[in-house]
Amino acid sequence: MLLWKKVLGSVSLMSLSMFGFSVQSHAATISSQSDVEILALDGVKVSKANFTNPDMLEVQAGRHQVVFRYYGDVRKGQRDVIYSTAPDVFTIDLKQDDSIKILAPHLNSYTQAEGYFRRGADWKVQDQHGDVKSVRYEPLTGNGIMPFNDIERAVARHNAEQGNEFAPQMQQSVITPNIAAQKITPPKGDDTLIQTIQLLYNNASPAQKQKIKAWVAEQ
Image (cartoon, rainbow, N blue to C red; front, top):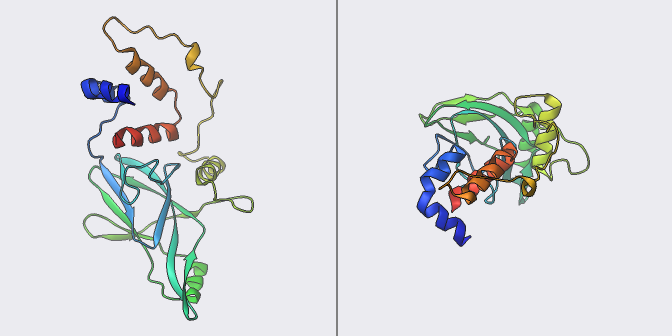
């Protein structure tokens, strides 16, 4: 860790430019109201381990896939209970400086929530200008007793079944590159450590690259 910080301290701009990203603020944000839980973004589980701020997800401009669910307090008889739904999925195109928030339906009772989601939710998002619009969504498909316990696996399976643009790409040969067998010979004056990190990043999957970016942003 000390070596890593020492390298970043002296050549931070150079090394980060090799990866194709910077520690500056991202182009757009995605968030939700308190009764909506965002479970995954672009196939990556939303957690503190994967994102700098899970409550305000920073993303680059472009098309993104959001997996979310309703998870809120409602009244059932004389007590408060949690009402949760199976996950839904929608995709959205964001431009630089866009900011969207997923809005929660106003639900007070358990029976009201049951009826609302049985009829089909009208999920809406609000942008940075205060404009509200409905989004087209689909249920996240799952198999087994606890199909969404591993949300990243569930999303990957769903995307593969749908054959959409977020479907995981199949590796043609070796799934995990044998980095130890690859000899790196950087030009004179280059930093071997940076070359190694760059090689690791380039061989990572899209989900792994997202985790690397989140980790670097935290340092």
